[in-house]
Image (cartoon, rainbow over all chains, first blue to last red; front, side):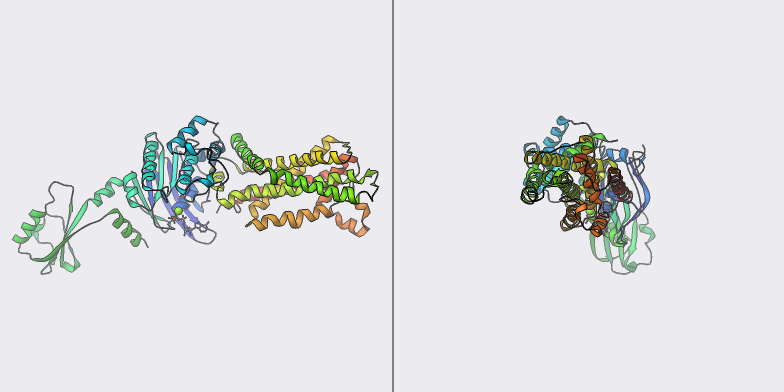
Length: 308
Length: 253
Ligand SMILES: Nc1ncnc2c1ncn2[C@@H]1O[C@H](COP(=O)(O)OP(=O)(O)OP(=O)(O)O)[C@@H](O)[C@H]1O
Ligand SMILES: [Mg+2]
């Protein structure tokens, strides 16, 4: 299936000279939940802004459902709903009024039943006549989601949707996102919470300094996560892995002072007992041992460091 | 054409008018009535008439024009500046709507507001002084054209402005003085020859003159020139707007 969003060679240099995006290539699949991770200032919001029409790209192209975002902006924007990172609302409007406005702005005929469904799903129906300035921060966040859903988009961008939202609301929000995905909506979200990406996403992209440094299925990332390393600190350094241990996937580290074994914790047999037996039989002595597990956090920090 | 979107913006802006009724309608009406009391009743009683028109009736078109200009500019500039200021402009920019349609929505609402206002002032004035409108169609024509042109100007200011002060500066320092010096309260014939000539550089002179002609057929410059100048100014504003939207000036980074 062709991707619903296709980003090619996208670059953005702001008027200040700052290069916020450098040659980004990214395809988003239909119906997936894609999480964009990256430190502050990485370029996440800029990327979303370009796809939604708020920021002009300096170079590169973006197509949405086969349509170019510049030439066919009406078609592409009508398919997209955006929940911005900042809580920007019209303080004096009522909840119902502002959500109804959003639907009209996107060219859809009035549909009070749909608006009611959206507001109920976000627990805002009771607040429909309240002025926005009387809402709490978390309610405003949900209001922005309601506005983005008012025109029934096929693609939903959530720019840090859970910032400032309490735990139970966060759960509700993710349930809503999952339900949306079940109805076929493609969801792209940014977050600083790695567990959220882990919980929610089908695929994860990591961006840093305007460069997309990794895009991977969550499943294969989790595979890396499920791997553990056993490090043996040897009594005598080795020049090479002894032939007797060739059956194991071993590496030498620290100039031959460490023997490193990588294994999958989720397998029934990790092979550790056999390895240790064979090591003793090969006459190799070790002073100490420890195991390490890489979390998504480690992978993330490691990648970000290396890309700098 | 995304008619629903234009309509949504238009309704949204008009709703703001009703919500801020005091500011939008009542205060200009009040200040116009005060002008009437001061210029029409107090001073006007000493000036019998100008070119055969009673002074009270003579100043009505000028007063309407003055409110129309300042209100069009401030309504339209505020209308677009506010979403820029709060950040809600993101939604307008991400909507499947052309810049032309955005302008139609915002400028249409601002112009509607000031046309309503002009008509309310007219009604107020007709209670105070006997009025005659010789060319009602031309009168409405000038009213609409001026409201649209100056709402466009206001829209431009609202996009250019970087703070609320700048929003105030143009109506306060440019429009109001030009309107005062543009013959709201006098005929150019009453000025010394040098000032008459200088006044011809004031675009508002042409607006007021044409507008007054539609009331009483009294004018400082010929109606044709008035219409041409108004259209010229409209064209200028449209050009600037076209350029703003082509470049995304102050709207998109
Ligand atoms: N309008 C602008 N003008 C100039 N520079 C900008 C502008 N907007 C963003 N930037 C810069 O571009 C870079 C990327 O910003 P962006 O908002 O895309 O980051 P982000 O990944 O969303 O960060 P965060 O996690 O903090 O939201 C930053 O260095 C930022 O300072
Ligand atoms: Mg951001």
